[in-house]
Image (cartoon, rainbow, N blue to C red):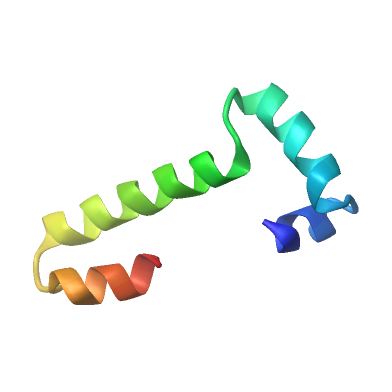
Length: 58
């Protein structure tokens, strides 16, 4: 999140407020949703263990 805030030219705390207003969720909630969707996709393809998927998506 700190890296996203830096890229937007904002402090971390200043980044969270407009992000939440625009998307209706916190940046961390959005990140968690993205990770879960990626994990679901990787597991659905097969060929990767649960441990490998966990390592790849954080």
